[in-house]
Image 1 (cartoon, rainbow, N blue to C red):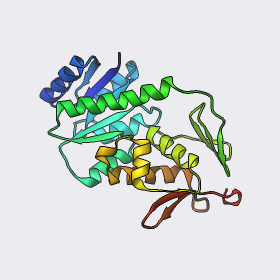
Image 2: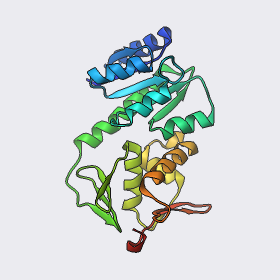
Image 3: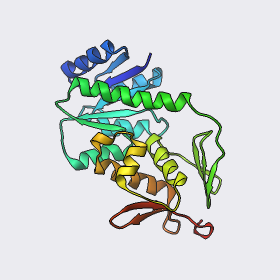
Length: 231
């Protein structure tokens, strides 16, 4: 049974989410704000977090900032603010999804199920694969690691999947739609901002001023290309 942490300072909303997901067979733990959630995460093993953003003591953005220092647990943001910059910030911090209130409980349950299903498939269907090496970049799928010049680069789930797709398709121009379908596996709700935020975060981790690997192909998409001398 999956355990989900529900974080919201509004009792009616968090209780409705808990009731909905409990009926779907999930175990739910309630937190009334970000600080409460952070303390519960220290004491309990969670499979997914559903969190509001605007909360007292510790808001959702700062909660995820703290979580992402050492934990890749999937996160779904809930927010009353339908602003692109908020979505970009949330996804940029490492959230896996962003829903705007008022939310449909059925949609939230469906997105929760889809996210947990993808994680389960990844965890149970791994088989040994030879590391992919492109220049100084090494993708070790067995250990789910990215190494640059032998140094491990910490990536969260979506960043890793995006980098893996690039490295499996070197020197090939990939559109944003192709990247979205490969990483999020959710063609019907393609979101340009999601790609932009995750790609920007990935670039900040795998590139430097003198070492580039993800190149923009104007009007078409992006291409992973690296030469030994680039490293």
